[in-house]
Image: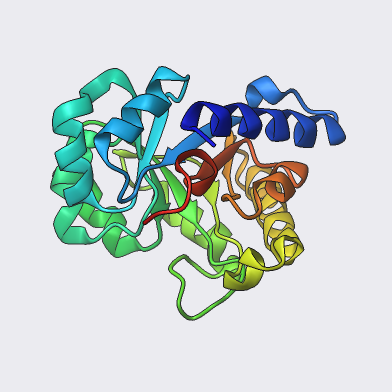
Amino acid sequence: MSIEENIAQLRTKISNAARRTKRDPGNLHIVAVSKTVPVPKIEQAIAHGITILGENRVQEAKTKYAIISNRVTWHMVGHLQTNKVRDALKIFSLIHSLDSLHLAQEIEKKTSTPIDCLIEVNTSQESTKFGIEPENAIAFYEALKDFNNIKIKGLMTIGPGWAIQDKEASRPCFRLLASLKANIEKQCKCSLPILSMGMTSDYEIAIEEGANMIRVGTAIFGPRG
């Protein structure tokens, strides 16, 4: 199918998933993950209503940003290395992958303008994944209160690797993240408006479990060559 058709189908599935849980589809945000996707295909997606691009690598994002610029909002959805922070801050308006105090310190040091961030939680507790342990989520959030230039807007997680074959495998991870969000809001008396979870293989499950931001690439751009 074409990118236009893919986006139309994606929006239909998002609407159906939202209605299953009596939610407003208009409150759900699509981050189009454009890792390795060439600019002409990205421009097609933008032409058909995509407004947020998610990139995994800062260097690749720099190349695309030089062409596309501020026609869209840019999110950092991959692991952010501390030596890439300065360049990342020039491009991204939301960092989905804050996962250590060391990274937070580097961001704080490199910017005088507050940057929105999500705490990445390793809800599947796979050794190959980044993210803080779920039991440390509240303490990590509390530690970040001391940073003037980091604004925590919510939480992010990635379903288990085997969810590609069994999307239901992601449900416990997503349910856990939603629970952590509620616990942090209650105990820390704060508001975390963003719950970023769900990719092409499991975004419908994520929406059913409370996601209001999903990160999808293949569902929009097709399989990567």
